[in-house]
Image 1 (spheres, rainbow, N blue to C red):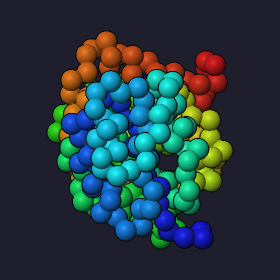
Image 2 (image 1 turned 90 degrees about the vertical axis):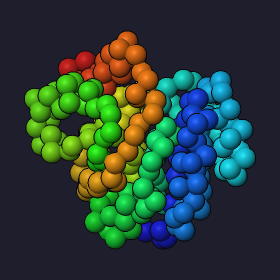
Image 3 (image 1 turned 30 degrees about the vertical axis):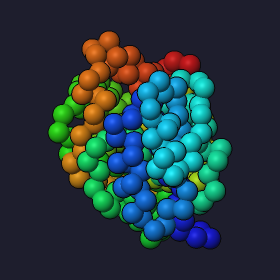
Length: 223
């Protein structure tokens, strides 16, 4: 790789309570030279908070996490890209280092995070892992297969077709493995996902459906 500079993309929708704290955490890594917040239809003060924190804000007008990630990729200037969630209020100070060191040290092409949850995880344990165990048994070793905190070489991500909804994270993981890339999983410590705590049963059901659809598509069971 030409350099170890990092672009961090933060998809965000109505995350005014946590976005500044997340941005300040990212700024602690000296290799990060570009931070992009992708506003995915926020109706609160997320955009202004991000701008006040001194980062680039891009609007994504199609609602959906995958859409926001795709838009962010269009503006990447560096060889290493990290995606992190905007709704975490207790990231460790070395988050970006943990995610990107395996790439910088040429140990991996793609890094998936695992973590200790304070709450949540129902979708992963009840829906995702059992299905992966049946269809992709070699992947079951990933303890957090739908984690949104990832890092990768830019050229690895550029060739992928992102799912447009919450299926995007599992879709990327399956695709990079099937493309023969080196994948590592790193522990980023304990996190508290603020927005997941408040999600309704209907919302969690929709998330599960989107994730399951992405898995089934990669076995050509559905289109």
